[in-house]
Amino acid sequence: MSHHDKGWILILGSSSGFGAACSKALAEAGFNIFGVHLDRAGAMPRINELIQEIAATGAQVKFWNKNIARDENRLEVIAGIAEVLTGKPVDFGGLNLADENNRDAALTILSDALKDHHGAIKAMLHSVAFGSLQPFVSDNLKEQTSRKQMEMTLDVMANSMVYWVQDLCRVRLLERGSKVFSMTSAGSRRAWYGYGPVSAAKAALEAHTRQLARELGPRGILVNCFEAGVTDTPAMRLIPGADVIKSEALRRNPGERLTTPEDIAATFVALMDPRVKWINGTTVRVDGGEDTL
Image (cartoon, rainbow, N blue to C red; front, top):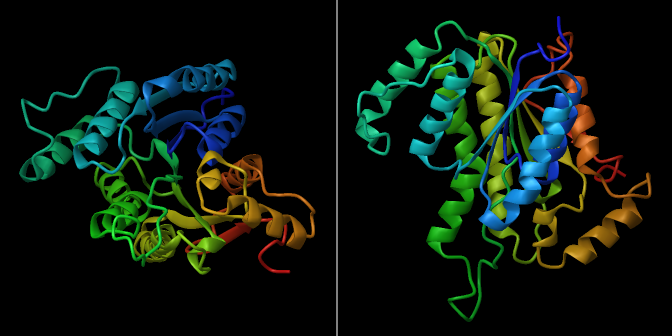
């Protein structure tokens, strides 16, 4: 087995924070990397540098700058994955991928294109941080969480994982031996001003993880959550009162430091050992004891 013949990892939210750290660590461990992210043009020099760092390990790497919550984008990325794996583009015969009525036909075409690549994705990480950070209740209606913001946050940060797993299983890119990971936090069960929509999304994500583990266990596909301790990521810095949260975490953590994205990445690499195959439907805390002690 060559150094990068362990298969492919799909990272949703690959351009920064946990996703970027996991992309680099898994490439160094011998995996090839598919990544999906959503960034403005100004961020692309940094992301291109990340792609070069991954490629420098000898790994194959392919990133797409797309909104992971849009159904047609998901189909387009899977088609791109198929093109990388087979060496030829997928012909949809003029199907409009944005039309929900065409989804089944599109997945059938993709499934046929990928018939020789079942199980090519050895793991998927859902690490998507994009949601509303406003209070539920405010005297100023413009400042409180709207229905649209609530539904968007839940859809992007939680429900989208289900839809990706559904389609990846349909085309059998996820197969026996594959692993799926989501990213949660202690915020799933704690209240913090302005964090309500994201807290609800994290709680839903944990529920989705358990349900997928129950349904995919008989297929030999494992589904688990990583719960990181407080980590100084770009997403964390947007939370109201982030400095207070970090100070409290430092005071409480017996390791006397914050969690880092590399802590999650190292755990991800360890759990990709093929001998690790009896952990399913659980939350793996990677916080140095921060949320226990």
